[in-house]
Structures are given as C-alpha cells and as structure tokens.
Image (tube, rainbow, N blue to C red; front, top):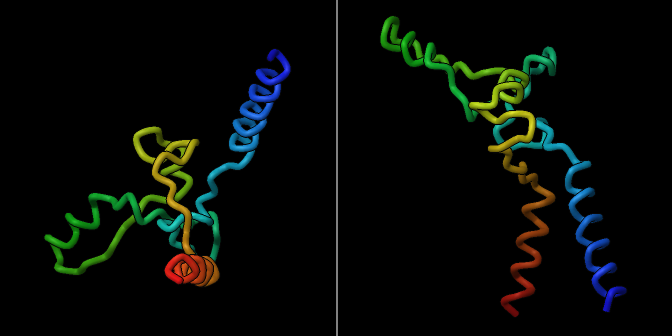
Length: 107
C-alpha cells in the first residue's frame, strides 16, 4: 500500500514540475503582434492603450496603440510573469491536426 502511494505522489510531483519548467512565451501567444524591425518592441493586442481612443476623438485617425509585451508581462494587473491571459496560438499545422482528429471521431 505504501508503495502505491509513493508511486502516485511521485507521478503527481513530476507532472507539476514539468509544467513549471515550460514558461508561457509571448511569441507563442495568439495576442502577440510582432514588430518586424525589432522583436523587443513587439506588442500585446490584448491590452490596448487608452491614448489610441482619445487621439481618435481629437483628430479622427484610428491608430491602435498597444502595450509592449514586456510591459504586459511585468505588470501584475495585466498578464504578469505567469502569463495569466496567455492563449496558445493555433497555426495552420495545428488546425489541420484538429480537423483530422475530429473527422476520425465522426466516422
């Protein structure tokens, strides 16, 4: 009985430690907007700046302004270091695999 409990605890601890080793990277997030010139200035489309809305009311030009990813990740009120609002980006390859598996379930 002790052996079974030991195996279960070991498995759970290994699973938890594996999850902690994989950081949520902004570059893999669906809200990531790359900057072609320099990746340090890439932005997060989840957090728009209020200035963009205010400027539109003044001059009628709609310019979407977003916070930098680094600002969003350092601020606990936004995404924070742990990536609270992180959502994995779905690429073409992932979409194909999802469709393929869902088709298998229908047959």
